[in-house]
Length: 84
Image (tube, rainbow, N blue to C red; front, side, top):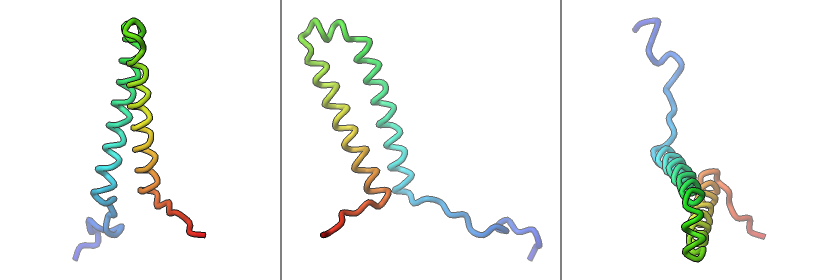
């Protein structure tokens, strides 16, 4: 066996596939949220002319995304409910 082995530092530990996929989905969610914010700002005149329903839709999408991110973060970081 060679003195200079490829695994001299021990086996490389990679995060589980679930964690990598979840983090990737969070990044995509943040990118789409930023794109939605830019779209809402650019289209604000037409939204206001149409009666403002676009603002409600945008707020609903942001609230749903925030809920998904917070629930996912709690799940990944291992937060558990404490029974009293």
